[in-house]
Length: 291
Image (cartoon, one colour):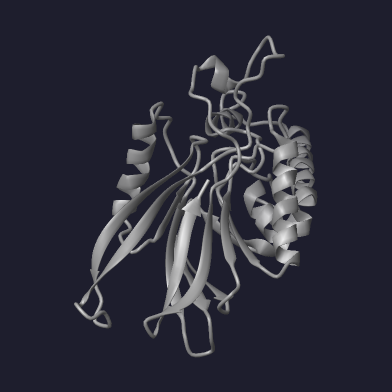
């Protein structure tokens, strides 16, 4: 688990959008690149207008080898592994796929807080990848963007400062996700159970199953500054969506989503809108999630 802290200067009247982006699968034929580029343009316009956008990369930005496929490569030829020249070819392919994605998101590169690892990535060999030997394509993308590599799980705080003397904390925990629950309830339960492990997280981000959803849980917490000593704290349970089209009518052989009969998911992202406000003489965060 990676612990992080990210400070945000957010004076009253300004808005910060926290946008978890994952399961883009940018390099495959079923990726909805047009939709993804519309999101990039929307983020760019928000930043140009003076708002803040903070992106959490949720994994599977590109689609290369799955976990089982990487295992097959390591065990190729009876465990002897692949030829050096084959590994060099794979390195070249990994760089090309990652660079195509990086070029697409360059206009918003400064918005990225960090990138989680997903299930689809490639590992660079020691033959032709230089300083990235033994690293994943996600680590390479994070390096190029200048943001933190979050590994499998990231937990931390965004610290919002409406003034030089005030710091307001928003707790976040993010996991690429696991499993393939078919019902809304199963997918929500997975996020709720994970959120229960992190009661101090206001935002629980999880992808992988391509579900774009928002659940909310309210908790009572002690608050010495409150008149009655108690406050309500909400925890959003967020399915971070996808850009992979599961069902298309012009294909004889559909995607793995269609072949497995998995439920279709609404494409795009969820996001959290954060503002600072002073209420009854106390500074507070006003944050709301939407899809």
